Length: 195
Image (cartoon, rainbow, N blue to C red):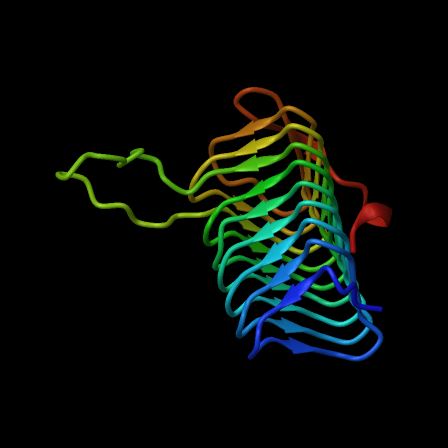
């Protein structure tokens, strides 16, 4: 069901069995595949794609070129700054910031209020500095606890577990458990918890 209070621009594609709640805006060039649910007050900008059977909560902003995989859950109040890819079967909880260029693998769990960053030099208003997107890369099967901060250019290896509140300043190897400020590897994920 698509609310009569939703705005779907000409040139946007909406599949079968889609639910779009009031005050949602779908911009031209966006693709919403079959079975997707989008709650109210969400904005989906140009060239965004939401794959089959995914759920998008209230008040989400997806800037251009954001791709959400199939069977994903995007909770309420998220911001995707664009050019972001979220792999299939992944979940991101409330109030998380997905910086421009972020890559999220398949079957990833991201807790609430996680922040990602892509600019080590904070180039704003500095003509002598050139902004280069260096967003984090999150591998498959990764779990990230509430309130973690992922700094630019870090890679989180497959199946790693990042503790709540961790500040990740450098790469975390696959299957590692890391927490703290700065995050340090303190153990290894048990084999029966790996995907």
